[in-house]
Length: 257
Length: 187
Image (tube, rainbow over all chains, first blue to last red; front, side, top):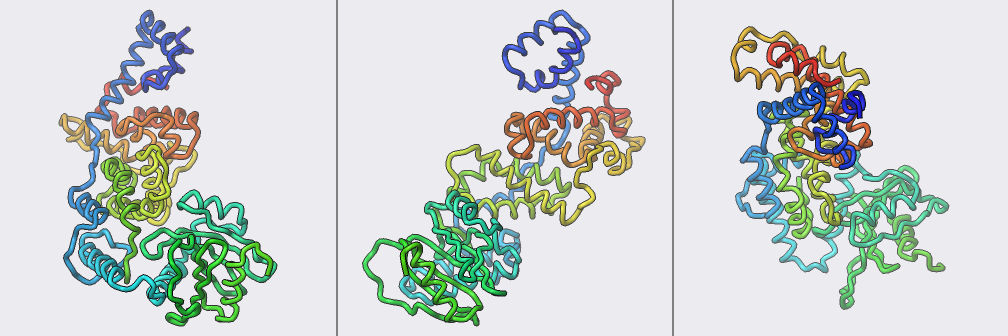
C-alpha cells in the first residue's frame, strides 16, 4: 500500500470503520510512514478536540421530568388547558394531565357500552384532523400502499377497499386514537366531503345492548357498523343516508350484497 | 381543548425507547436549531410523533429510530423558521455567510476561547455537514447508523464527513486556535 492509497482510507480507519483486512494493510503502512502517521494523528486529534471542547447539551432536567411524568402518568395538579400543542410545555402540563386524568377516570366510570362518548370522540378526532390539515399520514389512493402502511403500525390489518366506482375515493390513511387505543383511520372523499373511517377488530364478547347506529355530534353524522370481523365507525358532514349506505358497504366487505 | 394520549402499554413502550436517548435527542435538536427554547419545542414535537408510532415498533435500534424522528422534527422546524439554512450543494458559500468569521482579540489569546471558537465553527457549518459530524464525533454513531438517521447511503456519509472535517479545518473562525499542521492535514 502506498501513501495515496493509505491517505484515501485514513479517515475511515481512524473512525474505526475500516474492515479488518484493509485495516491491517493501513497499519502496516503506518508503521513505515511518518507522514501518514502524522496525518492519522491529526485526524484523531481533531476528533478528540471536538469531543473535549465542543459542548454536549443534555436534556434540561425540567424537560426530562415533565416527559417522564407524562409517560408514567403520575401528576395530579389541575389547571385549565390552553393549547394542545404545548401539552408538554411547563405552563400547560399540569392542566393537560388533569384533563387526561379526568377523561380516563370519567371513561372508567361510564359504561363502555355508551356509544355517545365514542361518537363524540370520533368526531373530535375528525375535527382535529381536518382543522390541522393533517388528515392523512399516508396520502395515496392506492389501497395496496395504505393497508400495509397501517398494518405495520398496528397489531391488526384493516381491510381497505376500493370504492371509487361507487363515488367514494380513498385519499389515504392515518393513525388516530379511540378509547385510548391506536386505530386505523381510512380517509375517503365523497364529492366535496371528507369521510373518516375508524376501523378496528370487533371484540369477542357477549352481544352488547344495541346502541343507535346513527347519531349526530356537533353537526357531524356518525354511523356504526359491524362486519368482516371489524367494527366500523364512520364520521362525516355528508348526509346520514349516504353515510349509512357507505358504512353498510364497508362492513359487507367482499361479501355479495 | 382535549388532549389525547395513547394507552398505557404504548406510553411505557415509548418510555423504554425514548428516555435512554433523551440527551442525544436534545443535543441534536439544540445543535440544529442553535437555541434552547426551540430545541425543547422540537423534542416535544418529536415525542408526540414517537408516541404515535411506538406501539407498532418491533425490536430495533431505538436510538437510531428516535433520532430519525427528532431529525425530521428539526428539519420541519428549520423549514418553517430558517428556510435559508437548508443545505445548498456548495458548502463554502453558506459557511462564509453564516457567522462573522473574524475572531475577537480575546479569542486569540484566552485558552477557554479555543472551545468557543470550535463551537462557533461547527455552528457555522451548513446543517447537513454539522449533523453528520456531530452524530459521529459526539454520539460515536457508526456510519451505518448515521446513514439510517440521515437517510443517505453510507458512501455519502463518508464523503459528507470528509467534507465537514475539511470545512472545519479551513474555517476562518479557527485561524488562531488550531495549529497550522492540523489546519492543513487531511484532504
